[in-house]
Image (cartoon, rainbow, N blue to C red; front, side, top):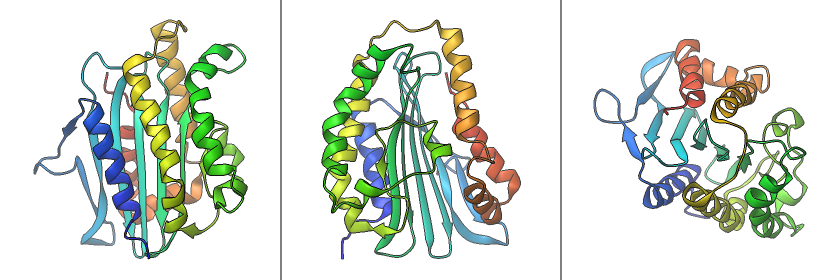
Length: 250
């Protein structure tokens, strides 16, 4: 059995990101996570947390988030790295939902900031470097992510370079494709320091980003997941979490 868990996998992504970028954590009142979560039906029961980091001013990065939700045996990890709302910097998203010490589903992807038809050179610059880690993960038919159709309603707001599984898999499968996911992360961190692209003006990009995240985080897009969040921590806290995920810091 692998010693890796969904939590340790995402904590490693956080550590790698902090080592490469000047993120500063924004803590809650007691110096811990921004929002420590408690179960709505058992206020003394730990239900996870929302952690938030701000990127250094002047960076193409805006913020990093780690949202953990614990509901009985199910331990969900959401990880986001957001580019600045007024830039063409893509967003990075990873998720692990663990059902037992050995069973999980997972995915990782970029959220593009421009349209591929209007800006083909942007896609070549941002996504072509993902081809090698993508095909390494999906080209081997023994890997579950090589035949894992995703929810097309959600995939619309991601990219075609998604690595993941749409049905229960194993932690060992996650370990197998982790080098490819680390390749995605390394490319994102490099873009945060080097990306230069002449796109629309800042105001247009900011408005588009707000619409994009409103669509991506819409409750109706993945109602089962958001109802699951609300059933654990309550509608008020769950809605606040959605707002924090979607709201730029800069």
